[in-house]
Length: 76
Image 1 (cartoon, rainbow, N blue to C red):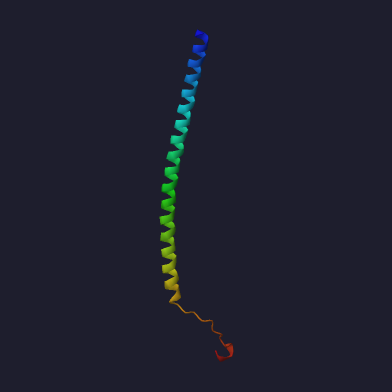
Image 2: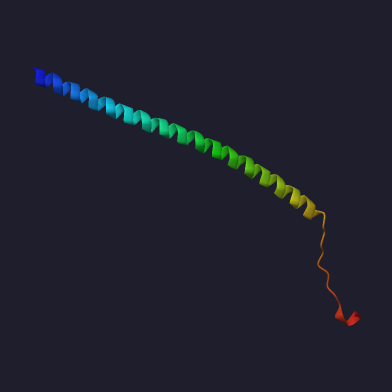
C-alpha cells in the first residue's frame, strides 16, 4: 500500500512538472505573439507612410508633362 501511495505521489509530481512546462511554453507563445502583433503594427505604419510618399512623388511627377517630339535633323 505504501508503494502504491509513493508511485501516486511520484506521478503527481511528474504531472506538476509537465503542467509547469506547458504553462511556461504557453507564456512564451503569448509573449512572442504580442511581439509579432507589435511588429505587424510597425510594418503597417511604415507601409502607410511609404504609400503616402509614393502618392506625393507620383503627384509631383504628374506635374511634368513630357511629350515625345521628333526632331527634323534637316532643319538644324
